[in-house]
Image (cartoon, rainbow, N blue to C red; front, side, top):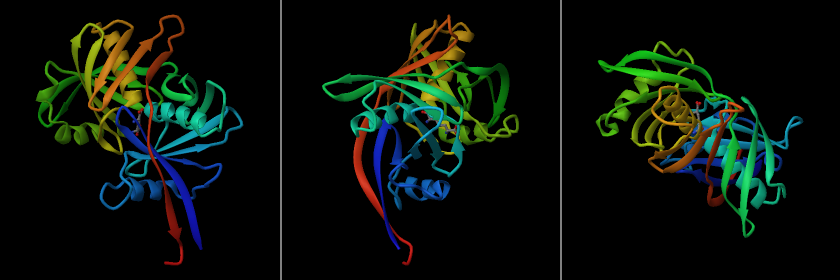
Length: 272
Ligand SMILES: N[C@H](CCC[C@H](N)C(=O)O)C(=O)O
């Protein structure tokens, strides 16, 4: 049997995923397809696969799979891209959308100009499990702060981010015995008040150009350790996000861009 699955490639600050509207194109084995499609040379090339679906608790649902096929509970950059997708493909005409994720319901605020959604603000909820701790990898000693933004992060502030060999140390920290569920790793450097440079090694996807939950975790860790105030711009390899940790509600707000790269279709011929 031949089946066609339409998809859209989108990115948020360079963190790129393949988006499928499962209301139209149901997907049976997303873990396997995420591995196949994410591969840069033999697939479409992406940081993972994101499924947009229905929900009985919210307007829509999101599922996110890393490039290694593992499922994450939340994705900041994908949540903004979904906001753009829903509005521009006519699945909603609302500018406030609720999104059901494995880490709870998130609220998207779409900023619409001339019928297009270029930026989205997401209420990312409360940070949790914050803990400062020493950690060692590759013979180097660091102090890290763990922060959960629905998914787990380890944020490490350094004097000069250029000294960090992320490709070598990232996987060691991701798989450190302290974190049996593995962890997303952020190295960060304070540039000036309210501006932090950050690079990320993502659990299940490796180096990515940006990470929305990672940017939130970095801003929270900076505020907790007195390195910044409540509002910070996080500058990553592929772009910047503005993160505000609201004192009254304890919720973290993330604002940034969402970009559609192209639409495509995959033709699956089960008989071949
Ligand atoms: N890039 C995503 C997070 C993916 C997290 C995933 N790598 C995991 O928790 O396993 C973001 O923008 O928030």
